[in-house]
Structure formats: C-alpha cells, structure tokens
Image (tube, rainbow, N blue to C red; front, side):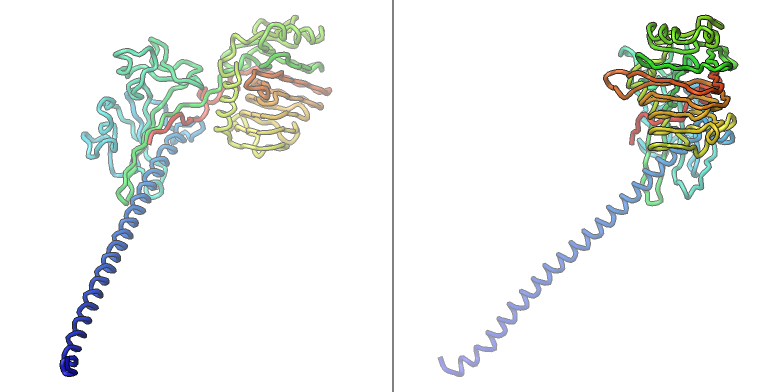
Length: 463
C-alpha cells in the first residue's frame, strides 16, 4: 500500500474512533442520567415516607392527648366546672369536641375504623345518646377531632365475661366492672356496679393531622380502687408486733365517726391467735380504751378480720396492686429517706403523698395533714400527729410513733409487710412510745376517696 493510500485511510479511522467515543459517552451519560433519576426518585420517596410518618405520629399523639384529656376530666379531683359525670347508662356517650366535625350528625364520611360510633365495627355500632362537652384545649394545641367515653358492656368489648353462650356477647345492658385485678359483670338484676367494684369505660379518640393522617385509638380504663378498711388499725400479716398507746386519754376506737356509722373492731388481725395475743397484751385498766362495733370493753375489741378483708388486702399481688394504684394517683412521690412533705393536704383539699422508702416525719413540721399517705419503708412519726385519711405502710410494714403531744388520726391505718412476697406476708409492726395522747378514730368518711374511687387508670390500649 502506497503512502498516499495510508494517508487517505487516517481520516476515516479517526472518524470511526470519534464515533465510538461518542457512543460510549452517550451510554455513560444515559447510565449517569438513570442513576440520577433513581436517586431523585429514592430521595422523593424517602421524603414522602418521612412526611407520612411524621403526620401519622402527630395524629397518634393527638389522639393520645384526647384520651388523656377525657381521662383527666373524669377524675375525682377534676375541677367541678369541667368534670365529666359517669354516664347514666350504657347507651350514653360523653364527647369532647375539638374540631369542626360533629359526630352527632347522621351518617359517616370516614371509612372503618376512622370516624365516630357509626363508622366502627357494625357488630358493635349502637345508637347512643350523645352528651357534648367543650374542650379545654386550644384547637391548634391538641389537634384531635373528638374523644368520647362510654360505659363498657360485653357487646362493646366484644368479649364474654361469663360462661360462653350464644347471647352473652350481645349483652349491652349490664355494666362491666373492675375489682382492682379482674373484669366481671355487675350482679344479675343490678345493671350498675355495686360498691367495691369500679365501672369500666371505653374511651376513643379521633385525630386528623394537617398532613392528612388519621388515627382512631380505643382505650379501656377503670378507676383505681381502694377497698374499705375494716377498722382504725389493721395489722395484715402473721405474728404482728403491737405496743399500743398506754397514756391516759389515748385510745383506738372502731366506732365509726363518719356519717355511715359502719363500725369495726378497734384492731384487726388475720387470725384468732394474733387477736387474742394483742388483747392479752393490753393492760387491764386500758381494755375499755379499745372500743369497737361491740361497744366499749372490757375486753378490748380486737378481732380476726380476715373474712372481712377485700381480696386486694389478702395477698401479695393484691397489696402490690394497691401500692401501684396509689402511686399512679400520687400528687407527690418521694424516693429514699424522706423527712418532710411538700404539701401535707387539708380536709378540703386532701393530698396523696407516696414515700418510696423510709419516712421520718415530725408532728410539728409535717402535720396536720389530710388525704392518703403511703410509705413503703419504715414510717417513724415524731410526736403524735393530726391526720385525716388513710395511712398505708405497705412494704417493710413497720410504723413507730414516738414523743409527746396530743394527736388524732381520724380515718384508719393499714400495715402490711410484703418484703417476704411472693412467699406470703411477713409480720407487721405497730409501736408507740412517749407520754403524749394518741387517739386513732375510725372514720369511713375519711377512708374513702371521693366517690369511692381513685383516678382513672389504663387497662388496655388498642391502636
């Protein structure tokens, strides 16, 4: 091949090479463009996912906020102006409205399970009498739409609480009640819960977030319970230590000072042997200072009250439930050794003080006081205090009252040693020393929370 021919082929070769390079460049650009579009799509998808998640979470917490508001406003210590009364029957629903949607309107524009009662499971959809209460929150602060409370029945819970039968789940007239541990039906012929049993409520809340998410949450709740005390001093456990007040003018009286007139023994134990031992330890000249439902002695009215104690007071699980119920409702909770109250309370404004540890309190600085005092460690009272309400010493089960002065505990004292649980209760201890005058006066008016119940507590939550 001549030089001239070679020179003529070089431009053609260069053109082919340039064409190949162009094709490769275009392919690379296509790949990079595809990758870019994929990254953009992925980023956009992630942004939408996060936005939807944020909207869903805001809606969820808004619904929870609605449930908390209605729970708080059903509490026994809620302000009278906003307190929601217990529904009169199982077909009355109490609503709190916080938006433009009015669930009283016929029909439903939402799909199950979002919406009011007409949008729920058709098997549980009922025609309810609706009671509306305005919200106490700003609409922009807690953006739930509405929240409601209704008395629980077998049909509304969609479960049987009796021997399973064809019609049991259809019952929508008998209340479901709570004894502090278990759900049960009100007695036959009595649609409402009897004393010592708290009504159960179904609370629901709807929220619609500005991002479009909707959340509908259902909660089953009931009032925490404090069963009545059998008398002014209950020593719940075997082989109790008792060294009572022996000064002139001191007494422990089981004669009810409240309006109910429901008297009990001056001191209650859990077996006859312990009752006899305490009775025999009281000096002869003081026997008539321990009157009870049988009147003044002698002998002192010391009885075995195991048959009268509520189940919650009878075993470790029940006593732990009592401690948890009071702790959940505490106005003030102290941990470790405590020597002072933040707020002792008054008869007009009783306070629930819980001390998770030992307490060393002074009758001069911390009393008079009123409400409920729970101590899980050793309780030492320096001086004879004035107290209206219940003193629970559940844990180490040891209470010691020392010093002088004159004090009246108007209500009741309950002592239980749970340090040996779950193997059974240990030995409780109640001792006094000093030359003052200590009087423990049983008073059922002071030993019951307002309305007989504590605050509403969560039993279950359905998202």
